[in-house]
Length: 126
Image 1 (cartoon, rainbow, N blue to C red):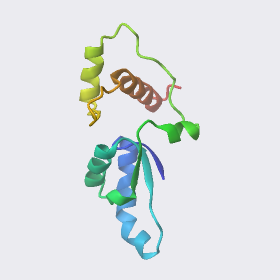
Image 2: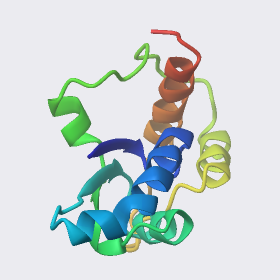
Image 3: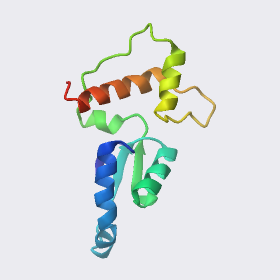
Image 4: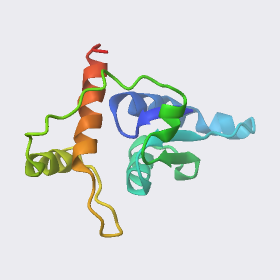
């Protein structure tokens, strides 16, 4: 099952329903695999929150699968270049976007851009 970002409203709603039927799926020998945009930390938090087994959750850190499937990405707006990086970092923190474990900097502009387009898409703007 391909979901949007792990932990957003839609994925949480789907996960709630899937979690409730996990025992029946196991009894019928039906494997469950959930793929969502996120990272290892968000997968763990999502599993704890949703009740899904962590072993069935896979992450797509950059949304490559979603792009390959040509899933809707919103209006493709960009964040204006005059927005300071400090504001973008604050927003990324506010959205609880994880910082890379390897010490590299996260791309706060891409995180903000993704959320801007996602929110516009949720509002019906394409």
